[in-house]
Image (cartoon, rainbow, N blue to C red; front, top):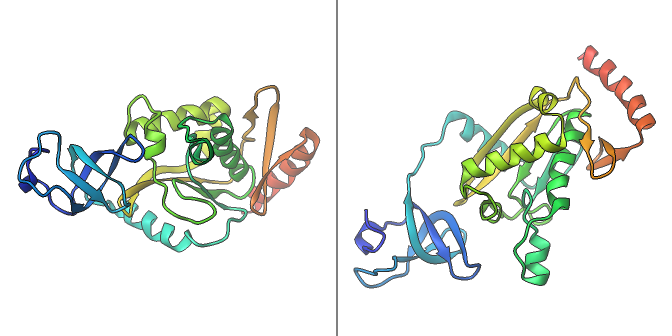
Length: 247
């Protein structure tokens, strides 16, 4: 298939384009073919389902959904418009600063955004478990996708994202304890974009964040990941283990 030939482009195929608005490479599903001529040397111009438009730089294979992915998509659709609570949270990105893009027109990563992902994961594990969706606006529940984060990965695709995400989490949380408490990390397609799903089980091991200048002890209180004092966390942990033994 040739990205310069209009006849090789069909609606519904997955492609990578150069988005003219954001000057980023974006992955998505073709909604409409915009180029009118039969041949365009610098790539056929298309509009994606998510509204992005630009010239195709690469054709991507369409992957059939696994049973697990279908289950996760159904679960996401059930959870999408639920209120955040003790075991549910949504984040727009893993570490890309949407605020910097919105208010300063800057594309950059944010330690605070990256830290908040591990904070939520630790709080879920230290309480009753939970599900975190990355790539979904926590206010509007619009699908942000993972393309903003892909741009700052060494390998700018789902594999590169997973590598960076796991490295970040294991840098901030004990690696062995995290993997013992993690039930699932999976990227799923949705509305022409991608979402990362992280599921945590209630942990038998304290998930402690390695902060900039101190250890941080997070517990989930309603829809907030609360930073406890060491004494407060120890008191919570006794009750946590008692409850795990009862379950």
